Length: 205
Image (cartoon, rainbow, N blue to C red; front, side, top):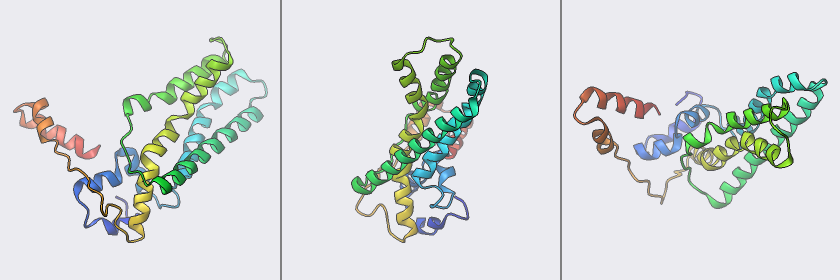
């Protein structure tokens, strides 16, 4: 929790489970340390679009004779699209007030790399290009960021804004306390050193 996080002063009355829901995992924790005007869902979406665009420089450079104008055009479209989707997620969360949920990391995190690989194979003509494959490759490349923002960050950003405004975002909402001790014991048995390592890892995640 960074010193610049103005909402941090309102966390004193929150339980551990409420605080965990508020800050989320490693990626959300990093975003939550930023000032809220920087970490707006549309800005996080734009940042994801920029990262994708930077990754595409090499395949464009290797396959297009006049790659710079085409890359700038596609990068602008990607950043505009991910920014727009981040704003839509923010508006939807204002309306529906949905709480943040954890994303499936095993499914979501490899998707940009798979999409990037498909786009590269199509660009280098190592894979046959058609409209369906091209559309799917760009969707796989672009969707993980907006999905994470919609499911996890936009709801979490709303809660942080409420805290910064001096409101209790969990008023009237019951957050189930998580008990990991039984799961850890089932995995580690009676090995105290292994239990300690698992607990340390869980606290950092």
